[in-house]
Length: 212
Image (tube, helix red, strand yellow):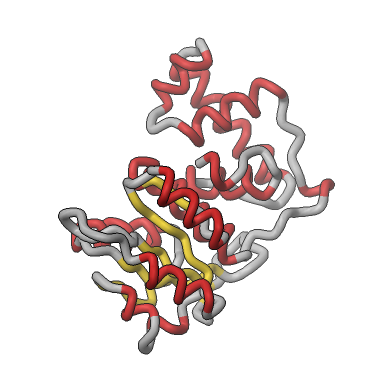
């Protein structure tokens, strides 16, 4: 499998293959993953890109099973990938009951396209298993307020929104996030980006993958 090491990480980063019928989405995801140090092994508009070389070497498949303009979702492609032991993250705007139920039954996490970069990168890292939970000694001691701000920041698109939800000023929110990053760095688990903070929260059980 493809992997790349990054300074400060206990394990190499995974490689991904991207499957989406929208070229602009493929371009955007590629930028996100490369920024996170994750190798994009292959990308294309149909699931066959995950089976040939080099897509077959990817650690995780990021798949949108819904075709452009509606039509029947490619559930057979998803089931085939899972049956072959491939690890799949479903990345889609569709959050209907059928989509969620099918993915839950197959054991595939679903990340809404509206959730953005941090949620998708964290889901790939968690699915690849490159970020196992650390020992208790490696977890920073966050105050209750710091945990509240961290979880709000994970779920919101902007610090201004976090400030409104937590009844704080934007400057105070920034201060909390800076302190949280410092606490993680002090225990040897740096989290310089929002995506890495999401991954740390997943590791520490502060949030579940299906809550992203």
